[in-house]
Amino acid sequence: MDPPEHDRLRRMAMRHFGPPHTPGLVIGMESDLTAVVAGLIDDVAGKERIDVVDDFAFPFPVTVTCRLLGVPREREPHVHRWVRDLMNSVDYNPETDPKEKLDKGVRARSDLRECLGDLVERSHRRPGGGLLSRLANDDGPEGRMADAEIVATARLLLVAGHETVVNLITNGVLTLLRHPQMLQRLRDEPDLVVPLVEELLRYEPPVHILPWRVAYSDVTVADTVIPQGSRIMLVLASASRDPKRFRDPDRFDPDRHDNQHLGFGSGIHLCFGGPLARRETQIALTELVRRLERPRLVADPPPYRPSPVLRGPLHLDIEQCDR
Image 1 (cartoon, rainbow, N blue to C red):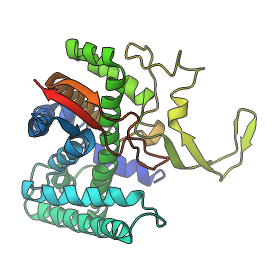
Image 2 (image 1 turned 90 degrees about the horizontal axis):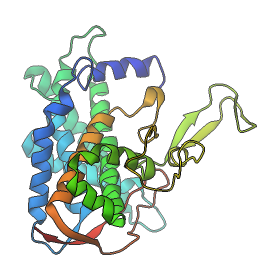
Image 3 (image 1 turned 120 degrees about the vertical axis):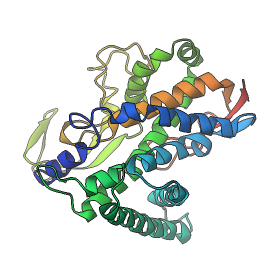
């Protein structure tokens, strides 16, 4: 969306998602994040082979976002299934994929919208503690969001917040296994995870391209004029490896200083859920490194999702011996 409507909705959502009005949201979720991660690792304990995507990285952010929104526990399995079917349909190829894949995505989108709408309606009658309820009953300076706007915001958090975090965690595990000295260092120095995740966002970001921008005026880039009204594709991953901005850009270096990457975009559309995504990934990688003993890639490179926009393995099989 564009201003001023974009700014209005973002301000209303941020009142309940972070500073300055809700500064403790992410910190307050840390114990729940750690518990979810520990449970997922417990579920694969003792297995010789696990798929980091299916067994860990996929269920983690969906569960977290459900808890954030205030989705009842009994409905979480349904949301997991709908998000999976919806995201599987994003890469639908009519030449190679069965139409059932697309149909499942269409149904999932409808079922998810209906479920979230029902939860918002219930929140008007019985307010709760989740983000859906807070948005549904907020009497802030700009009034309340319309129910349809709340549902759209919740779907955005579920879908965008899911796919990016899955890729970020999986890319992180893959990068650490390709750099075993960094894996060991993280095991020995848990605080390294903060700059490590920032470097991961630069070096192997989950979003490579933003294809939905328009030039509002004539813009000159490298002696080339981009006319007003032109559609623009911003290649964020390339910018984050610009040798004019980053020294030795193709090297994974968590000790890198002044790491102003574009992993979460920039400007007025800077990733809304960036603080939560950072903490999810920090906790996930720290606990995986601590709990898994001698993990080894089964295949390198692993199979990737066929998407030019989102980059992450479709599956990441590793062999491991639990401590």
